[in-house]
Length: 120
Image (cartoon, rainbow, N blue to C red; front, side, top):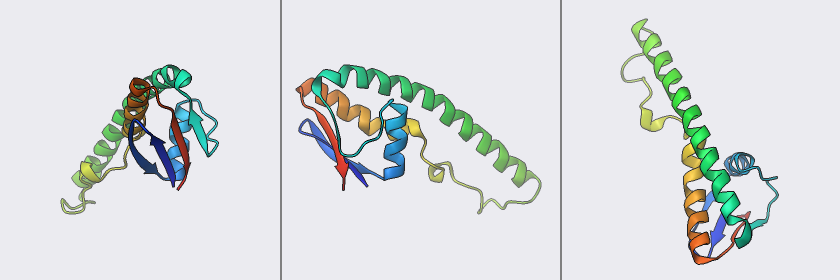
């Protein structure tokens, strides 16, 4: 588990795997522990916003493909209504994983505080 912290926002944790996906999307090396100093926050925020837009498009495509596959299986009688996956239980896409990081970065920038992360 990786804990993200800043004096400007509540801390939160992510699994190591998810945190590494976030770091990769932000162009970071994923070294733990780490810090985004105040001077870097504008660039990291811009990268996070861009990564979120790209991820949102990918997530929407993946959800549409999953929905189409489920409908095809169901129409062929291979999947009962009770067994059909509820969209609320589908995997969480990267665009949603970036939200708490982006919110923390924006609050940290407004308060001129760094963001740090470490293993929990």
